[in-house]
Image (cartoon, rainbow, N blue to C red; front, side, top):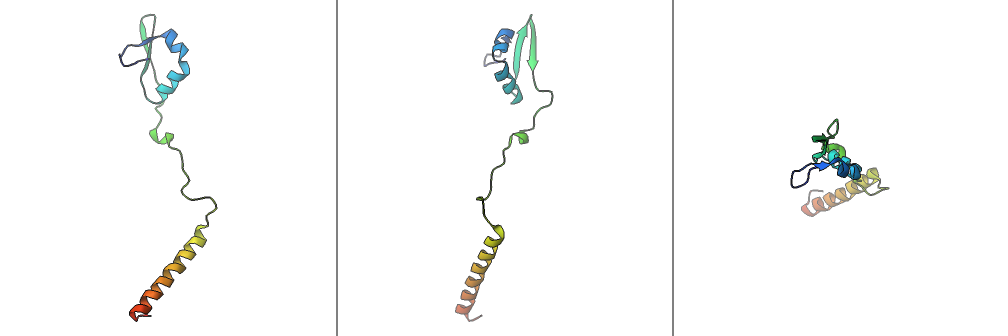
Length: 91
């Protein structure tokens, strides 16, 4: 595990924080530990795409009938047009 000092932690420290360190590695943070004088680096086999972390969000209120809302909007716009045209003597 590499911290601000850039020094790899012991395998005992790594073992204590195994799941936390695995999560860090998944996020792309370098994770290193020393065992018998050899530095090991832990990284996922396949780097996870940043897009895979995106979570979908609802874009409309539940139960909204878009077809009916479109018809209502069109009728409202049409009424406004007719009113504008009648004021200008076009209708």
